[in-house]
Length: 99
Image (cartoon, rainbow, N blue to C red; front, side, top):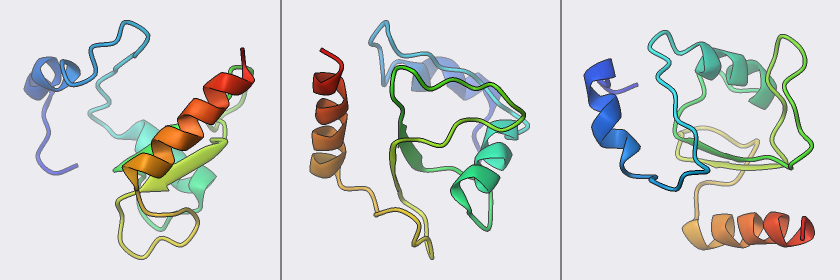
């Protein structure tokens, strides 16, 4: 959102090198616009951190609503602001429930 271009993808992808992580370039921000609706935001979704359950799928025109999410946006009340410890705790809880 802040000046990112396709040429930056390779370097940014190294930040999350886990083989389970999938990364895509969305230069038109179509996903951000779709999540605007799903999350009830006034602008495109960016700087959002979303957790999904293993059975959640994208089966319609809009992506699925996350089970939990946090953000680094201004004037958003639909979810808590990003706190790393809380996000890790929620993520670990979701993973543990699947074992």
